[in-house]
Image (cartoon, rainbow, N blue to C red; front, side, top):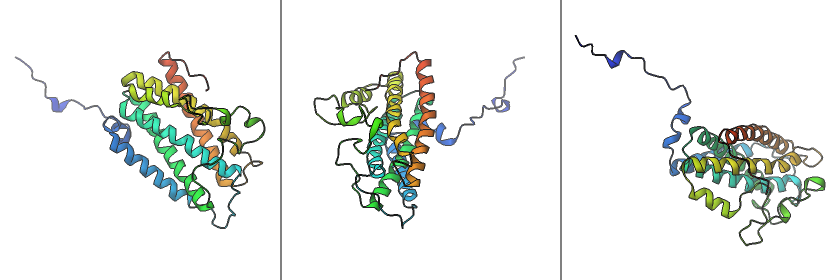
Length: 241
């Protein structure tokens, strides 16, 4: 006698991951844009909760410079994360990219909200990181170029246009690995600004220092994760540019 198994009696495997992580493979470009806009909008709302009676920091202050330059630094990280979400295939790497995209777009929103409240330009009109003094500023972004033949100052860790073009041209495991290399260097390069901004001697606004410390905490953990992921792929980290 032939025994026919009843598929309904088998215990189905249960995916215990959060719903948004289960949906990552289906996240398309429009979904990435929607998530980015939501994160940015939430950041704007959070940024408006700062004390309204606080005097606006001076235009050349570290608080203003940090908000302007870190917004630009974050914007590139969000852009690279969107590329990974669109072209990558490794679920762990894409989950990390999703975390970076959502958290940093939220932080951009907060910093842009501060700048609006302070009546300061959203983008810096001075050389990158010129608001930093002392040993923190030595060899930093004011003397760096994008490497594309144009004398455009960039900040430590930021990818050049040729590197971004390469990232966009890759797919599958190759884009996963290169994304990790670029983003790890990006995180490491941004540490200088964050460490400067958490120092009360440089920034008097407590809410600015709090956000800078939050960035340090999150990005240190993410950098450790990316270092491990690259080691598992036998891929070397990129040297700081």
